[in-house]
Amino acid sequence: MSVRLPRLPPFWFFLLLAVALRWGSFFVSVIDHDESTYIVIADELLRGKVYLRDVVDTKPIGIFWIYALLNTITGGSIPLLRLATTVAVALGSWGLFVANLRAMGDRTAGYVAGVLYVLMCSIYAHYGMAPNTEHYFNALTIWAVAISVAAPRKRWGWAGLLLGLAFIIKPFAAAEAGAVGLFLVWHYRNNLRRMIGQGLLLVGTWALPVAGVVAYYWQLDLLPALYFYSVEVAGAYPIELPWYLRLKYMGDYLLRYSPFILAGGAALVRGSFSKGQIQWLAYLLLHFVLVTFVILITGKRYGHYQVQLHPVVALWVGATAGLLWREVWQRRGVLIGLGAVVLGIGLAYALYYGAKEARPEAITAYLRPRLQPGETFFAINGFQITYHLLDRPLPTPYAHPSLLYSAHHAAALEIDEQRVAQSIIDNPRVKYLVGGTDKAGSDTPLTRRLLEHFRVAGDVDEEVRVWVRK
Image (cartoon, rainbow, N blue to C red; front, side, top):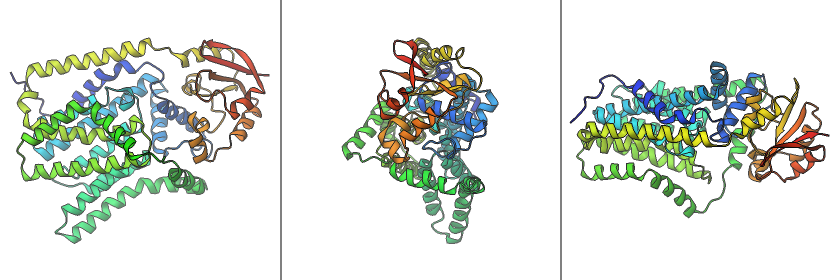
């Protein structure tokens, strides 16, 4: 028995679906330390510090401006910040619905793409459940494609602006910009004047956010810092990785989502598509290739990088399997099964995260009565969300511990660890050190230098120690 699907653009449907899948992760303080870094650096910006001068990370400023805004709106509430990421996922799903509806002429193809994107972002912790830059710039690039490539009336100016905003969140969004740009060239292949005019519009509006960032740092007289972190550090960031490990990295992604991908492949072989639909599928192949190239070029094998592939995979599966088996997707039994899966995943995450040890909260409870107004601490090898929970400033420019304790990052950013250690020693407001004794970074030149000036104060638990200034 088929069920009639809603007739309006179903943003609220995707939002409810995303909340039902992700609510179990809203209340734990840390899913991934990257999110903690965004929150803590945003706090520093709201205190008046300047990114790339007073506080530093490897990412562009866009994600920190987003979190500064979200921290202001939510009061820094972790559950509300997680809800904000969920809204970004829902916006992306809605954009996928619109894109496939326009390109394939079928609502079910749109629904399948949107539902699949929410699922892909909500199954694995480090492939989408943990909030990251990809959730925010995906929402922008998805809508850029929906209003340009997929739309009968092309909005190149607005698409360029969205792609430019995505770029200042993470430069990897250059892949989507390249795909849209190549499509524009192909689309106007028989009209050189339109190709040049619309191409200049696309590039010009894309450049506006980038120019805004450059102007911001120019008026602060920080263009050399912007160049260093955006160009020189980015150039030193990639790691040499053998080709077979890159293939393994991609193979792991394809295997994780193989049920969806195999369904799309089977439908592609069996389906019959119009000329316009074939052109859309060809565009999706180009899009996939460019995104794959960008995420492989760094040599890093972080799962969250591959969240950037989720939209194009969801579109492809929706466009093939969603179209071919549209009657199957609308059966009451399928929808009931989807509802059961969604509720099960949401409950499973609630149980999983509810059972995890809440070390940042324990550190917060230990330090809160001991820290006097104006005093702060230094988290030796993690737990940076504790700065946010205690509302205390960072004592160094580096929120993410890997910048200090990863030799690769420290070399790329030209960090003098001994100088950082001395700055902490010379700062009388830093009263405590906190560290996990079983973690990498517990025994480094920086840590050994610090411990010459601090003594053991006690243990938060069997794995977290606190030192106090001598």
